[in-house]
Amino acid sequence: MTEMAKKIVQEALRLPIEERAFLADRLLGSLDREVMTEVDAAWVAEAESRYAEYKAGKRKPVSAKDVFDEADRLLT
Image 1 (cartoon, one colour):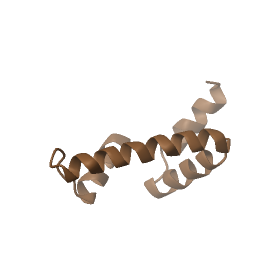
Image 2: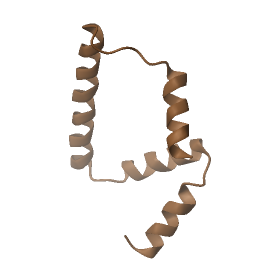
Image 3: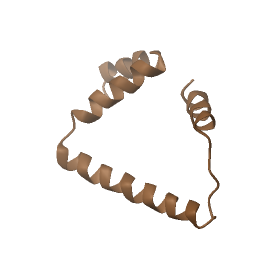
């Protein structure tokens, strides 16, 4: 990673969560659509697998508040 990229990452991580989410969306949107299609397909497969586990009683639900609290903890 170049020094410029490292500096950008450091600055981006200081942004409020809403601005980081916007930036992440813009960056991901700038990637080649073929790459995004593969990534999107992998996320859909993972989501379907997790939902099937939840419906079968093998996975417990997690509240949105707990998810966002954990995300905040990991990002700060």
